[in-house]
Length: 73
Image (cartoon, rainbow, N blue to C red; front, side, top):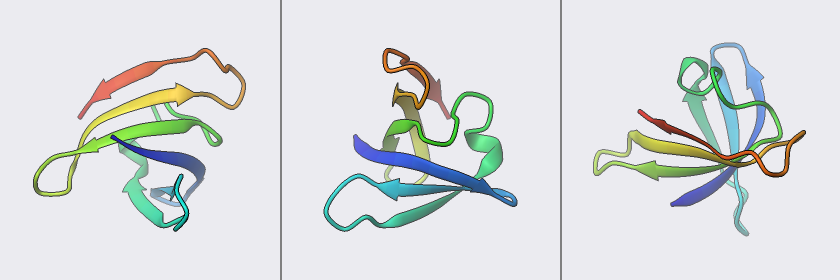
């Protein structure tokens, strides 16, 4: 799974920053994450073969270091 930090919500999108040396940005529709992820959360994301979100886990929250949430998309 790939690690991303949810940087912020902007308009209709969630802005994710990849947690590697490249620090690539990924834009995801806000509606896919807003129910369970907050800005600052570290997300573990699995993509399907077409590049769509398959599974998202909140592995560390900004306000709760022990939070783990799972969402199958």
